Structures are given as C-alpha cells and as structure tokens.
Amino acid sequence: MKKKITLALVAAGSAVAVLPLFAAFEAHVINVTAKIENALSVPIEALDFGTVFPQEQLEQDLRISLSGSFLDEDRVDDVEYIIRQKPKCGVTEDDGEVLIGPTWTGHVVPTLDNPATLDVDESEGGTAYTIDCDADEPANLELAPGQTAGLLPSLCEYISKHGPDENDGDLESFHQAFTVASSTVLWTDTAGRLAKSDTDAEDQTPGDTVDNWIIDLSVPCFGNHCAQDWADFVTGINPTADPDDYVQDIANEHKIFGCNLWVEVTGVSEAIN
Image 1 (spheres, rainbow, N blue to C red):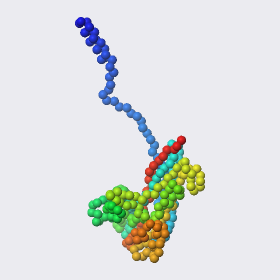
Image 2: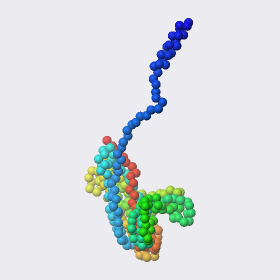
Image 3: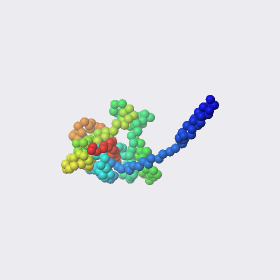
Image 4: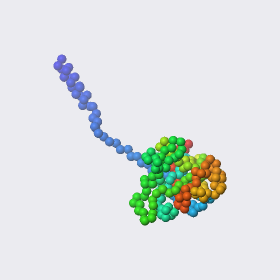
C-alpha cells in the first residue's frame, strides 16, 4: 500500500513540471500608418466683388475639383460635399467702411442668456443666439487706433450658388443662411457631388471631376432709399422671398459686408469593381 501512494505522488509531480508558464504582463506592437489627404481641391483666393451698388447682379466662379490624390487612388470613386455660408469677422476702420484685415469665420452660438440683448431667430421655436468672433480670432491680434475687430454685416443672404450638374444643388439669393430653433443651428446648405465614374455634364467627357459653380451676388438696398421696383427685383430672383426682410439698415450703408463660403466633405464612396 505504501508503494502505491509513493508512485501516485511522483506522477502528480511530473504533471506539474510540464505546465507552460505565462508572463503576467506582456506587450505586442502592431505598426499602423496612413497618409491622410484632402479629397477636394478648393481655391483659397477670395471672391472679391469690389464696390457694388443696390440692385446690381454680379457673378464670380468657384471651381471645386477632386484632388490629385483622390484621382490617383483607384479604391475610391465619388465625393459628396456641401457649401455652407457662415458669418465673417474682420478688422475694419473708418466705422467699418475700410477693411484692413485679417478676416476669419464667426460661429453661431445658440444661447438663452439675456435673450433681450441678443439676436433672436423668429422662426418657429426660435432661440436666442449670438455670433462668436472670438474663437477664431488670430492670435496676438493688435489693433491700431481707430481700428475695430468684429462681425461684418452679412452678405450671405444675397449670394446665390448654382451648380453645373444635375447632382449639384442650387440656392437663389434672398434666403436665410441659417435658422436657430430649439438651441440648434439649422444651416441652409447647398449640396454638390463629384464622381470619377460619372460623365461630365459640361463637355460629356468621362469623369465628373470638376464643378464650376456660379456665385451670384444680388446687391441689397438700404432703409428708405430702395427703388420702387425693389420688390420686383427680389421676387424676380426668389419668388418665395419677402422683399422687406432683405432691406439693409441704413446704418450699414457704405460698410464692408462679408460672408465665408465653407466647403465641407460629407461622404466618400468606394469604387464598384
């Protein structure tokens, strides 16, 4: 009986000896890299309409194209994007009549603080809001005597956008660039699309790789200085617009107006093999 017990203990000891041992802490490194490129090529030059006069209509071109990197990558095919109109801030002098620069984007901030002192959107469920010109103000901005940094009177309502293809949107002048409701900013965006697999609408060549947008400015009038045919001018361009909503305050006459066009990619699709 004693011999059997001894053998059993030896066998058990052998089993323990061959169990694998694992480190309590270990690390593995997997190298991950990616080269990130822009899908669109958008010019950075300003669209400057210069000195304009009430009820003029002027056009500028805006070219948006697929980037070289996107064209060279066979895995992807199309890009969907939007053009958004945002408030513009800048440095001016002579009571806002001379733009000194620089300029930057103002941000629409819904707020319920002191609504009586803020702009209020009169749409259904309207919410008080303000335009923040501080967030993107250039660092170390120094103002000379007589210069002011702040929000420029808005040109956004008077700018139309016309896309060249049936897959691009259109937006007539005399519209609201945004509304604010229930503390949410609702933008009036204009959609665009480019695709290597489509046919260009302008010259019927393979590949819709460039959108040549027409940006049209319909110039407002001021206070009680509007012409008698102002209403016809407005509704002839946008039949849904109320002409009274787009008459500028006489205090803004002679001032520099501004608007930032914000081009944003909303989707990228892969090519179908």
